[in-house]
Image (cartoon, rainbow, N blue to C red; front, side, top):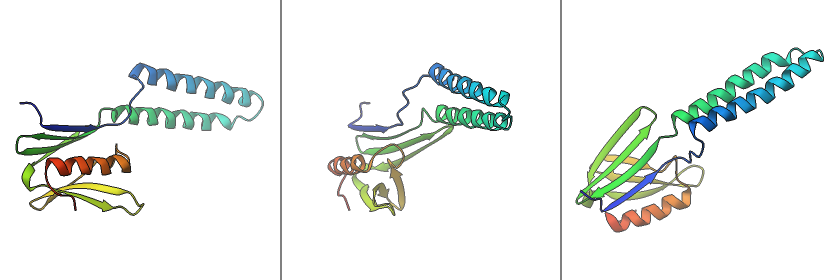
Length: 151
């Protein structure tokens, strides 16, 4: 069945897994060359800190790799609105009757607008990770046309 409306928000994941390994290797090699140079000059304390730096960089790349397939998705098919969220190994899906959904924009403490979809006591935030404030406002306007009023 074809979707009447669909939007997918996902992170920018421009590096392939092979490029991520090459980037970590390049950073590691450069860091170790500099650390070994200073160790030979008598500043051997640099070596443990270089090792900690390599662990931190490796973990950062691992974390971004694990979350590179995360997404948030809204699909409207006939009278059903579904919100799907995937974060690493966690997947959740919430479905609403599209004609009963309320689109809400709430001000966050930092001044941004947060987009919520609410129906029958359930409320789901959308676009908080992968969308800018302007994109959330534009999406709220589009959803208003698809489901109902914006509050």
